[in-house]
Length: 350
Ligand code: 5GP
Image 1 (cartoon, helix red, strand yellow):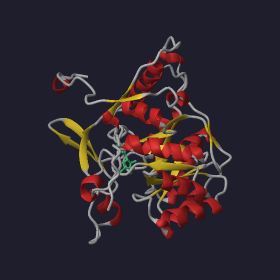
Image 2 (cartoon, helix red, strand yellow):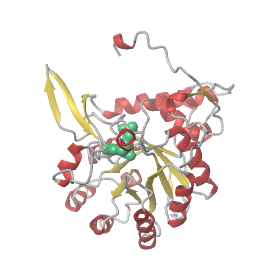
Image 3 (cartoon, helix red, strand yellow):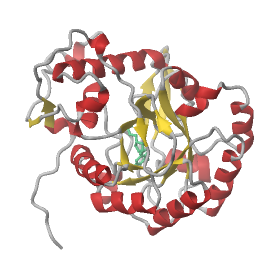
Image 4 (tube, helix red, strand yellow):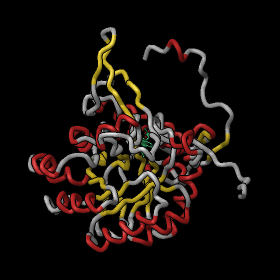
């Protein structure tokens, strides 16, 4: 056993200091970014935010709405090949720039992935996603997928330390997904004692990835646009959001009504709810690592998108970043013991 003494930080432990700038208005800020990948010849040119591949959030309907504002959706892995086929025959060409095909690492996942990708050469992103990216399975699967699909943009995770980021990039991933335990409906940290504060994970993993011309996605833990700005400020190339996009009309959670209020169920992909839904039961050797919550129905996702993009533009103007890409260079974090004045939080009307 050994203890690493250096303190690791989460979003709530820091704020970004303002810096002098020549920007006159938030409208001057460009949130789009061109990203060239390590292996794939393809380019990403939208807003580097991704809706999570959770089964209630990473839906086809979500992708239709978010692609219209140049945001990516990681489509969840539970749609059948036929559902994929009938969906993608009706979408415009540029839609494919904003969807990722998610997969696990089993043989069945591999077979299904090949079938989905064979539906259209325009599908360009593959998101290989397992809860514990430290498993040797992931490295082997990434190597296999890179060999089979040399030109696709491959993203793989989740991990939280630099040496695993390097290992995944050297195995063939273009992008590594970072985050163990920060998610809004995740209970991994309490169930297992394992995790890594997200801000430090981003800073350390970005350093490892960028040294090898790779990229990272910060996955989980953002509860507002300030956190998204901090994730970009820390060095994330993309930020993946679950809870912020959950509970909207475009999601596929069950809706329940209580006292005339409508709620949508939202749950972790390792929750009892998800395991029963997709596997029929919780296997005897496992425990759940996710929660089930009910969210007051939030309406169309486009309002939330406007709100978070407005917040991000404002973060950029506070530090003088004309482009989202500059946010990292212009960020100085200060460690803090307080974030906001909470006195009227219980009575906030909107
Ligand atoms: P959020 O944006 O809601 O804070 O985090 C979303 C992320 O949480 C997802 O993209 C995924 O990586 C992670 N996640 C989703 N479901 C679960 C779960 O049941 N357990 C754990 N440990 N993580 C989850």
